[in-house]
Image 1 (tube, one colour):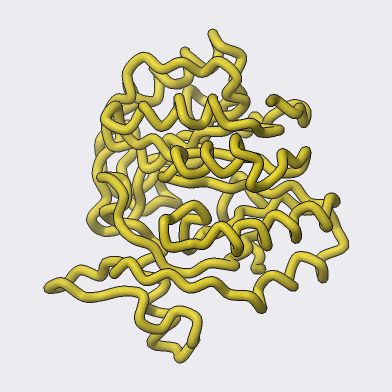
Image 2: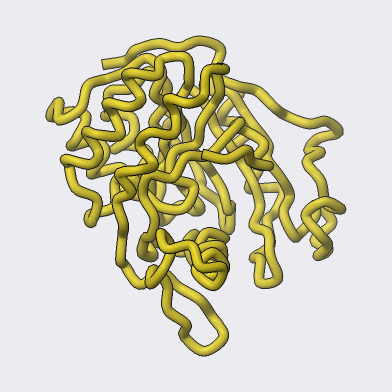
Length: 260
């Protein structure tokens, strides 16, 4: 586990390492570059997880389950919001049901923390939770990533997954998501892409999500403009900042509720 600069969480915990590309939002995934860097630094956990195609680094589909990392949350006494697997996807096909159950056991035994699990594979998440392979826990928030309208069907899988809190990360927002049903979706995170090859974000795309959140009583969190500002100019993430409609938006789910 490590402290993080991710605005909507307090720490990250990575019991799984490695992944594979699932959709267009994965194209410039920061975790691929980070895994490559950690491998070059001699971190065994990240060895052999990426491949280089020309100048680009990409996941190769190898996933590692790190049993030793399961011990980390027990050492944290102070309550934290913890992003689970910032360097992978807990519901990747190559993560075993057995290991997912081990992660769930840790989360159950550390109720002082709120765990935030984000996946691009919500159909497997729905199956595992709905079939009671794992139990619904009040301190586990379940979410999915939706970067454009082409993957908006992920929201239905999320909605049909029993969870205390359900959330969507509209990041990197690379196109309009259109009209979406946010019924029983408690939280939405919106953000543009960062990095040298970042794709632009348009204010209209943010507007349509913000409006739907307001209409459907979903907490709205604006994470960043990313590399492209509202004036369609490319700058650093820091220069573009987090101000949208004249203010920052840091709304969070107001209460923990178990929704079966």
